Image (tube, rainbow, N blue to C red; front, side, top):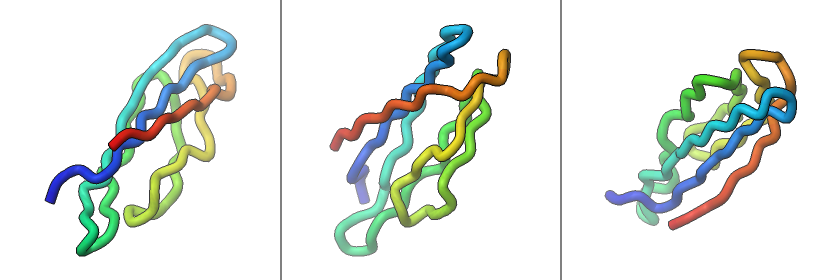
Length: 79
């Protein structure tokens, strides 16, 4: 069983300009479906994730630890 998909997140605070990156991977296979890794632990942002390990993870809320501003969330996929 190898890595099927990767999803990279970039969080940025529009107020204090902190930036942080994180990566989650799908270790599933075509035989047994998706199995996404644990969600990223961000140091500079409080993050709330979607709730399913079999579905692609999504951030539905992220805020800067330092100033409390809502973070800008960007993501990209790779194989």
